Length: 89
Image 1: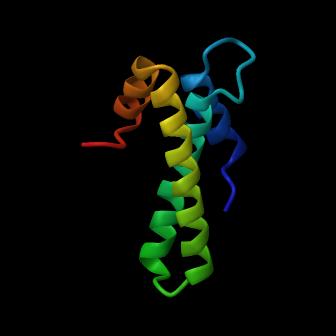
Image 2: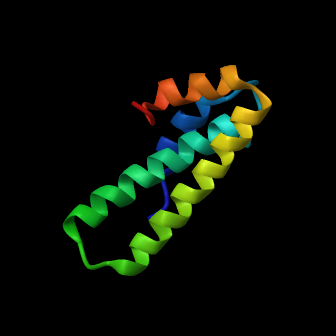
């Protein structure tokens, strides 16, 4: 359940810090968030797909670690990405 290349490019364009940015924490968190949304929709239909559920939990943990890193390095960038993606209430 990989992301479509067009979707991936659009997300990178929205959250990149400079022209050739493809791996900054902002971009990584945005890509992970999109994958998490897609897998969550899949699991609403396929409730007993436990291997996908395990993968979802791993992605959530990876996103959490990236957000913790951003929070410790630059709180303003952290707040921006949280607000832009609507992760927290």
